[in-house]
Length: 310
Image 1 (cartoon, rainbow, N blue to C red):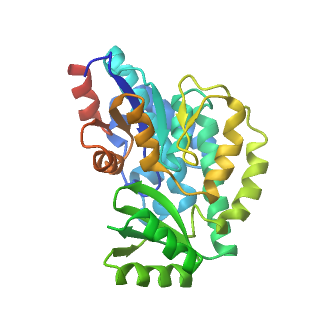
Image 2 (cartoon, helix red, strand yellow):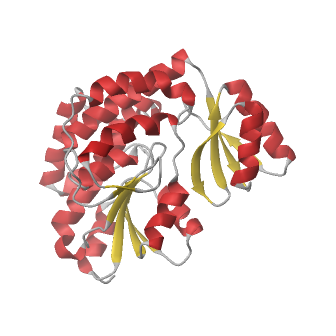
């Protein structure tokens, strides 16, 4: 991959976590052992033990999955920077899917790693508590046009929580409302899959989390990013420290504009994407959005060593 080509670093969100993720990095690089230790200190417990040993249902909990995934993403990034050096091209943009936006902010030096672990631990806690106060549900809707689904959402009091790729949308709202929207979508020929989540994420039902998160973010000193970060909320670049607090609050109740974010980066000439962290969810979405781009996954020692050998 030529260094003259525009590159974006993209970071996955909740749902990509797996027990033992990053263990090969931890076993191979002393710097990653130190990073995981830093994560444990920031989280206030042995996040490393939970990531490497599980149990899976405990790792899946929102309060744990969020800091765990940030740790995994930044471990992969730091290892790639250390091992591949100049063979890992500098990004023109950084972007993350929902939770992944925090990893993108670390990559762009807008916040430090320990702060991101702390913030996502708090974010996970507040989102879970909001789900208890205002219970809700989410479902994936496959094969439906955004405009048609928007109409169903208006009829049922739900919202589109994620615009992931053409034909993959996520709806969110009260459980009965989501069930009603699912039936209407099925009647129009769409496939609908309920999601195992603890609340109606990226919907107005997350408002209680916004109030708590505002207090947490008020204590954070953001820096101007070294590269533009593409907003989940607007799909436009964030270039100033003054924009981040508002962005991170709005994304709790707003839909994730992932498809439009990728389309924006492609329109700026970005044809090469590094998915950094757990899983390959974003690679699949990006290729559905634009078949012409190239996506490289950096999620384990083997992938990082392959990059370094190129």
